[in-house]
Image (tube, rainbow, N blue to C red):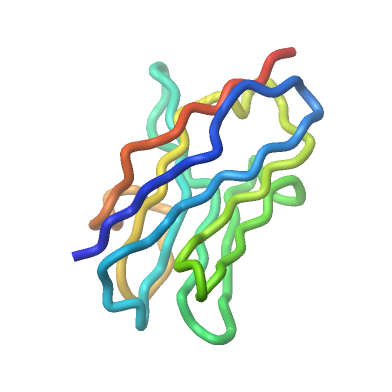
Length: 124
């Protein structure tokens, strides 16, 4: 059983940066894929980024965050990070960490494990 706990959300001005953290507990970690999604009350859950728990650590990004957000992993701390730069008002959402096994996916219904979410608010 995988448990995920997000942190790092908050209020930031447009153009600023935030780093979200997702601590991963349980496992196993082999073949684990950890992703970030975001959601606002008026939209469906949107894929942000995902990374695999492997040596090569391949990753994928959603189109709306490409070039601004970076996903990374710290094996020692069992934590996945989402560095968010050049934030825009439209990045405002609840950000969720999610996990699944074997292959990355941009579809939220493909992820089995979910954190509780952390609010990110970008003021314009």
